[in-house]
Length: 435
Image (cartoon, rainbow, N blue to C red; front, side, top):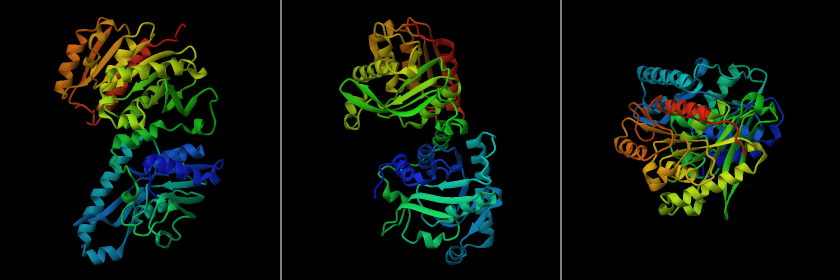
């Protein structure tokens, strides 16, 4: 079985775990790769999502080979056979363990921002990873969960080696894998897209999940669902989130070929949701269209798709009477400004992140929507392009520079600054629309 990506693997795994729906379940993902899989499982089960933090102890000369793992609450698992065969002395093992323990603490703070882990005592806990290889991290995760008082533990993965149940016998009450293929040597061989994830990806997954109240059906007025956006002759995948009492909805125009799964845009969208703003993340292009790189830079095409999506959104009850804003990233910023410049577009505000507003050309002069341009201080070329584009804007506008940030805002804390700037701009300029 070959999975297109971790999200799809999680959806399939969630379907396999349907017998747990309606129970008192908590889903715990193993960072980093297991978190998007776990997020899809949690969504399928209507269960809250959290992390089970573990760290592999790699053999010093072969870091990819696990000689054990550690978890929170002092859990420690050591594979004596690997340690012996690799000739790892005790002081080297202790050094690796100390280093990984420090990383465990760092990740706990980065991912949870000081909040305590979700309570698992007396509950059914589903531990999810993107696959099992040696089983060391899975074993440490299950022992961590048991130490915290889980009533029942389920270890669920999309793929594992044929002998995985023998390796992990007794570590969980139930072991579930969608596939146990022969010839297994690495988890990544069973994914078309197995890109390495960053801390921001994990945080975005966590923030995109409904809260515990929402997951248990708390607020009937809020919307958080996968949608199919009708844009002219095509249908585009999307995700619509509208909190109860939202003042507006922000449509995201992704750039450079990225789509609704962009972790950076998901991160920003979650920050807007927490501020009471709705968001629509959707693919501007179909998969086939995205293969042609010319489409990625076709501002007029992307703007037309954004305008069609806006019309589609305004026709839904969840957005009735709400102001509409645009958030554009990279080339998507040009599409957002182009679409906002259309007569009667009625776009309340536009925000550009690391954008190319210059690609909107003469349309810039007719934009009436208040526009915020956010650029990284170390993104020198794009900063110059934004200054030039700003000089052509006649609407209310501002250029905000995030010190030290490069084009993708990968530096610690910079994406949080983008989120705060966008949140404040939208909340200051978006009031219920008068149609």
